Length: 529
Image (cartoon, rainbow, N blue to C red):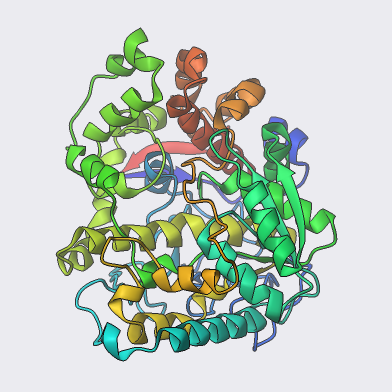
């Protein structure tokens, strides 16, 4: 049995309450010019109309191959059927499992999938940067440490130059971590006209002082933006009609806030430090190992989380919810809806079909025998389905160029194939010692933040500020998510706990996007043979 949500043949339909917030019919931005060929990793946002709206669509979305292209989606919103299993994906994991998309007949060729194959009928996943078997890398004793750092610096500078060639006024999203610090070092040499922008997001972290000190020492201009949940949500709603697809990454609203700020200050391009984890490797710390062992796929009674003892504690809710998760899906960040909750929200048994979408990754998972290898696969999936899309979708909506220097093929292939194992992950399990040496060459002491919070956005603040608005969206979208109003009403008093606020966030992201694509009163939810 297959559940169908039909959008009909209407185009540009936006429900009244959403239209008041986002003002405008769905479209993909077409104001930006095409990216030059020598800037393979800056996303073009030029869009042309597709005459055949009935054809099945494949979209290139892998920045590692420089082929990000949303052109096939132009002028087709409002005419494609939404995929209820993809909606379940979003609520369960905060992203749609690739190669699927929010539309039933649109597939995405993200990293690991071959665009030349039939992604609709027989998708095959293969991670290029596997943990096992590994390439024959040089032995540590045969490598010149200083030469490695110099080669890394040169390749990173060249990656910055290539990926930002189309940008007149680039802005770097600079956290206090080692990736953005190393990238800032290269940018200071390759694009010293770049402005650094740091986000003071969730309540657990403050990277501004560290990032500002790095920028100032490197001679780069630095700005900061403090999270205002209501402002960020308004900025997200304003771009919803022009976002090509949907992801619910927990930093999506931060990105919407930042990119809107950048374009308002005259920037035309965004530089992001994502992309190096999959080829450097992803160590698994003890906390994550314990959580993975706790994930048992158990069916837990919903009343367990509603008790006063558990319901007020984020840690208790987080640990208990882990018992109900698949071990592989526990690698994905954040607190999400359980399978039972997803079925209740959709009013149909859909969560099991979302779980089945993991099957395409089973062969790749079986090829690795280490926890780090499994973590690398999960990181690659989440990166391709959530982390990159939050930037790709928002910058496309605003007509900004997007650069991911760490995805540069020359840099990534060199690191994966030619850097000794101990410079990828050291013997004590610390990640990216080569990057740390690159930073130490420029700073006497490592300046970056070592402990980072899990949430990059004020989730509880959003729930407090925009409950009524999101509840209104839920009422409007009752034909799509019939259980959403009831869930919001039942959990309103618990939204001060970020476990529940995280789930509110997923609804706050998903509902207005769906409403912008379909007149909910005309949508039909049924069962097809």
